[in-house]
Length: 339
Image (cartoon, rainbow, N blue to C red):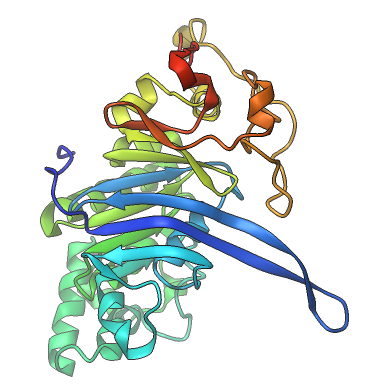
């Protein structure tokens, strides 16, 4: 894997992004509450960089990806691609930016139209965006099939005739068809066998080196995230609680939730004797009625009285390493990541 790109203007900038879903009840569909799926998320992704976004199921990480692509309308906040604010663009004004941002979906079968051939699926984005002639599109589809490890003649087959790994390669080829700058991977390998996961991850990394792609890689498998990411952001109940480069995160977590996630990663038995296992108590709070203060305080082994009241600010604790935790206020340290 290549090193993280040099500092330059980021390709993607997300600032205080929120996505709340209204809850409707009664005959007149009166709004009775909100689901705070994404509740103030900020991050950036450089050109040629991979940001891993991790967290438990239901923390809002997939919603972040869909909202920044404008598949969901944001409640508030801003999304900038190449310095241009696309938060409130629609219709023809948004179309040029859709070419620059594509998505690889979690389910490699449900994301493919069963009534279209694989070649038609990969070529459809080029038809929508009116790119090239029919002959040029067919040529590019064949080239993309070859690049992702599929035989070009397989373009005439239907999705049900492919294996799960092959279907995901079709999804990757479709995402590449418009020559995007950014690809959002919504757990793109979680539905695949372990051996196939490794092949797809290596393919994504090779494509990044070849085309200079940027990735937002949404996942819950920390081993996969460590392998493919330059930086990692940890989400809990709609908020980012920690973000830094992958080495710092895995060697020196600064948030109790990150510590708990890392302690749950399976490791060889010989090493397990020296690792501190963190067992979280209680269930994940409801995003409809999140707890006040730090959302994690009800399950945190280090919680203090102020954690129940004050919302911790995501701030830089060491160079390049940000976390939102009151335990670091005033220079207080605690043994996170201790073996």
